[in-house]
Image: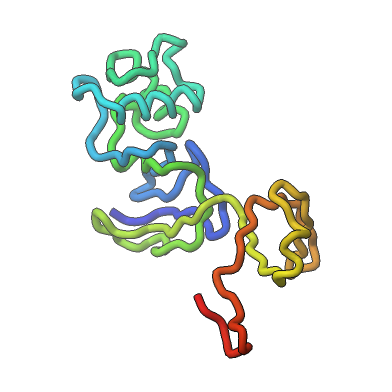
Length: 189
């Protein structure tokens, strides 16, 4: 198909957000550990991938009026919830989920870069986006004599290149893996 849109670099995408569209059909991010390895529709064997889909539908507010149970069984209420979700996205309400509809990832992500531009023709399995984690992480090295000044949980302020400052919290403190040799002749690791 032809790529018709791609999430912009720097964009954070979360459950239900579009990642890209091929032939005007949006593919969205859903949260889960199990990749979408089969089409999910009425009649498929029970499995944890079905429960994962149902968890996402419920989190997005589509439960067929509360009739859909979050379990491992794809029944008519699951199909109705999928159809309602599809209608809310403006796509054909088929009641089934295919790899054209969604990508399951462990959580939200940040678009590092688009691997293709709109108008590009893509083949199955082609890379469309590069995603990174959505949490911003800053690593800083301290002199050995400063290590005791910082504790896990401490509030910090991070100065950005543009002069802005953002608040943060120390998540971990690790000892350096390098130490000076006795003769000052370098580091050992």
